[in-house]
Length: 68
Picture 1 (cartoon, rainbow, N blue to C red):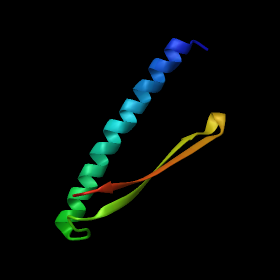
Picture 2: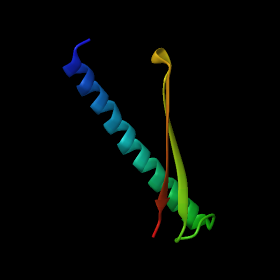
Picture 3: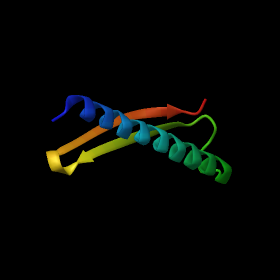
Picture 4: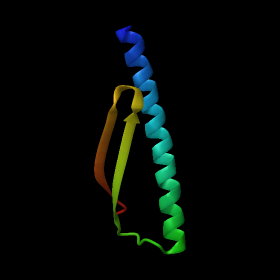
């Protein structure tokens, strides 16, 4: 394994995950606010699951996203 290539590809993947996830969350929150499903003072519980089947990885991250 070429460590430099692996590191570069990993960072590229994580950047894609971060950017696309942020956009999806922003859109979903705006829609939920507009529809009245959530309030502006909500604290949203969030969970992200990363799976790489070939290496048997399932990594979960939990957190909260405050709107105010």
